[in-house]
Image (cartoon, rainbow, N blue to C red; front, side, top):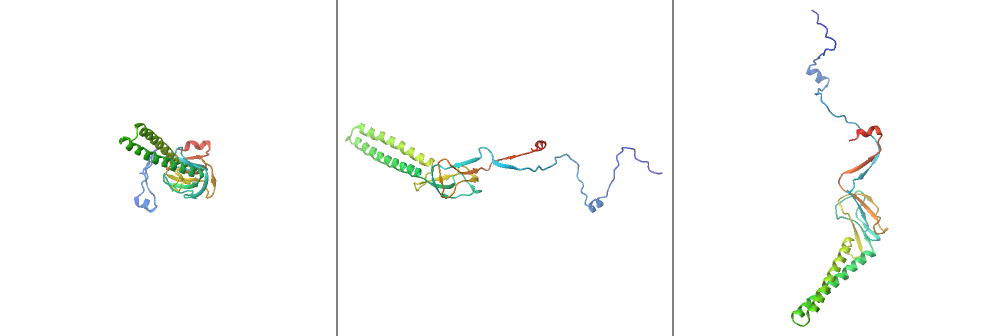
Length: 211
């Protein structure tokens, strides 16, 4: 007897032998839910996220005598990027040296007065005056040393080092060998290894497609 036709709307199952699938290079996968990937082509800019970029400034006015790092270089916190020879650096170094010399003199004077007081040669007030002078000299030496250190005054006493405060990649370099720079002039920008910001123009219809 002839097979009865399938009812309208009934499912029809067709079985294909595995060897036919292999010969036709047909791969069978289980059906599941998922997201479809898509691309949006546009132009934009990439910038460091806030608080992850350091602007490195000149700590004193003067001539750039050395540039040790270039655009794109990876640096660590504390690395020297350049060197600026400056009269201000020389003045700070001289003040630091003078304050240190006064401190040594005041210390010697106090030690001498202490010995004389213990021997009954000089009155207590002389020793106390020497002690007060030592305290003042110590404070002044600390202040002068802190000022020179904050400006990164070099060991040569006439230049300041341009130091990167963070580790990262140099994304901008304005320092030019031999150029004269003013204090607080931007010399470098260093972007940290943190997240970045991407600014791009998108059609309103595509905004919802961006995660």
